[in-house]
Image (cartoon, rainbow, N blue to C red):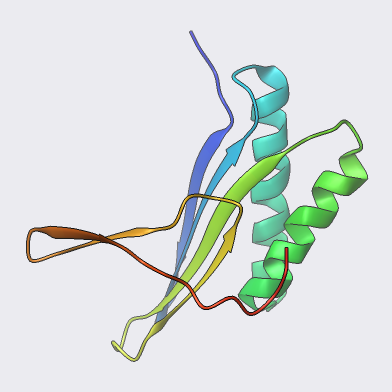
Length: 115
């Protein structure tokens, strides 16, 4: 069976949905290990109460600490379930798409931090 470094993760609490999508470079065991590394870094930071930007920094630092020329892109999304809004961090991944009333649109993002 083929393996790869693509992941998704989510967490739901009483008022917030957290989502992540990551894509580690490669289609081998190293890619799977890299993907596991960044997902666990994201989860640890999220559980510690970190904001999305800080979660992304934890993921980046985990890759740097790994030291094996690992590379991954990803997106972190937090959606307020009361409909008040959402936040997204895009770390080198293609822009997100939104499907609404049968139409797909690419979402432009305001850049607030260099990655």
